[in-house]
Length: 379
Image (cartoon, rainbow, N blue to C red; front, side, top):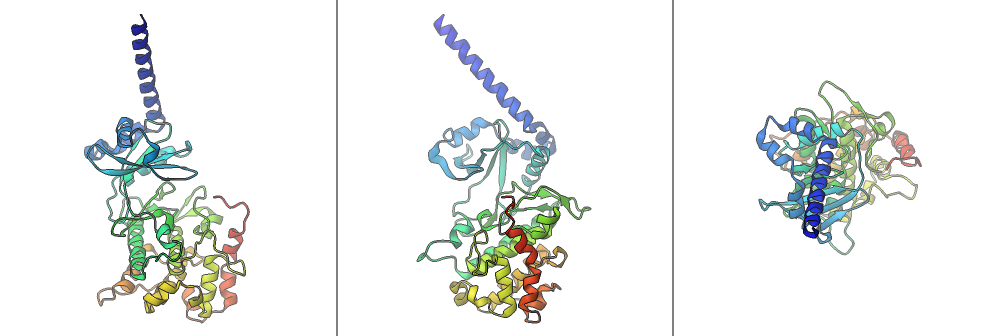
């Protein structure tokens, strides 16, 4: 009788666990995802990953397998049955809002194959919060390499310029080369991963949104990171690819100065963007640049600084596209007759070339200062 009771209890527990998995699969829109990828059997087969496979890959989510995390969740290193090394993102917070759109984006991202975008292998929907499975990138984030403590050497200029070019290439691809343009919405150095050869990989598409080609923008809940967020997007809620361009411009400034956009404030309480553009207008930006950049970069540093200022123009329509940014960086990095630097007719160039004044630059960025100082900024 005792043995029989134990057997029945185990059977009931196993059945209850299976029912729970099926319930989570259903509420995480697993059937929708199956429909979205059903036309391509090879994608469907690898896209939806059973929980038991991830438990084996991580030794039942052993704490020793944790490789990162924060307030929003944990990342585990795992080895799949096919010997692929993966990073498994396990969120702490249950987010039900817009879950249909999230699954749709997961299905789209699963079909993206770009050298500079972190590959999404699949997801597990058998837990309360979906688990996302990415390729494992071994060399940490761009933020880690830029903001190392002295006297450790930071990234050399040639690597910084190449990483900027690779990141621009990935964003141009997301904006232009897929069926529905994808706006990342959270470009920052923490979301640029580097592999063993320091090749850039754009990661973390949790905030990304697809914008149909016949729409100019999409009103969404404001998402982004303090210091990188497009002020016009913050105020209008209209999301376009130019918001990524602004964030990328801030990233270029970070590469040039090694200053953290999230925390930097000048003696005059200016943000990194406002301080950088004002000094550039006066021809004094050298005082803000990383000495290593000045030593190694030469004339190219000035060209990248001009491009960064163009990207953070307060009017989105005056910013270049990511394709223009990519081509410009290519021409700076590898000068060649067949590569022509893109012509970007934006007001910032008049300021950069000394035709404007410090007061004009300050007025231009008063809106950005206002939003940076807002106590109700959404983190």
